[in-house]
Image (cartoon, rainbow, N blue to C red):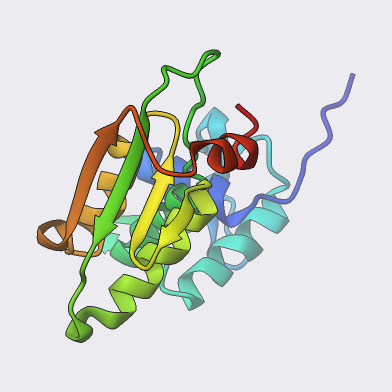
Length: 183
């Protein structure tokens, strides 16, 4: 049975490079067959021609470095590529909901200064994407443990000093919130 080779995604290539699975730069050179001999098995699921194309595209986007290091031609993930993967990871971040609600409300409050307006806007967007509900200006609520996930954004945007967490058993208009969260 012949395995169908496929076109690699940016994320797949960058994750392999991030994991330290380096590919020889000779693989990308036009007409080169030198790179094919030592190609790691992790790369073999991709169509070679399409992989070369993807690597060149990633180089143009400054997501990979292609060049010489310690006398060897290599391709490796760049700082830009690492940031790209981090953004994908953060965009895919979710809060795991336990099977049963523990009856506690998690409250996130913040007062982020105007000079950090962009960080404040991104933080708000992330809270809403995670499913928190705005109950008052700069006050969000959620029924499940979420402080670890929110702290990632707090650290990322450098706003740790301006964001506070609280947990409470009682909250005004609880029935409305329970309806919103289907609990």
